[in-house]
Figure (cartoon, rainbow, N blue to C red):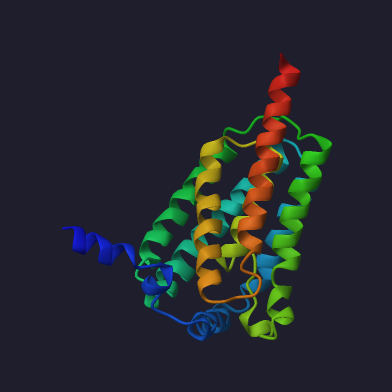
Length: 226
């Protein structure tokens, strides 16, 4: 028993990955080629999300949640189930998690209240959403991979998760809604680190920033209410 446990404990994430950095981005390139021109309405949807965060209110929060729900559902099916599952056996489980998050966002869209975020909270949320929609696709160019391997909000999971954290922060969403986006940032960030991707630190950094801001403003709101 002890020998089995010792042998199992020596395994790391690198031993569980069944693909290389080249295979990973080749998959993204083929995926982008297959779903084009879905990137154009996805970009418009991302700009709608940014606009909703910039002008917080019950209606705009509802619109943002519904747009995000559609994005999570699409990524669950088109990315995780149809493509990522071909190189990663965990792909179907990721698809299930993204589907659950889509349903949760739909449910939240019907139950959001009109609480406006604090000014600094709004700025952090807007920055996260803007970086996800506008900045994240540019990482492909900065890494020398070209537009064919760009990761776009609503098409790829990473920018979709980051933008979602921005909206959840702006909406002062219940902590349960944060669990899957934060978990994905941790899982994907660890995967990119094992693949030796230069910007792998971005996902966990954004997740920590969003979570810290959420906790800070929630605590400040609770203190002000007393």
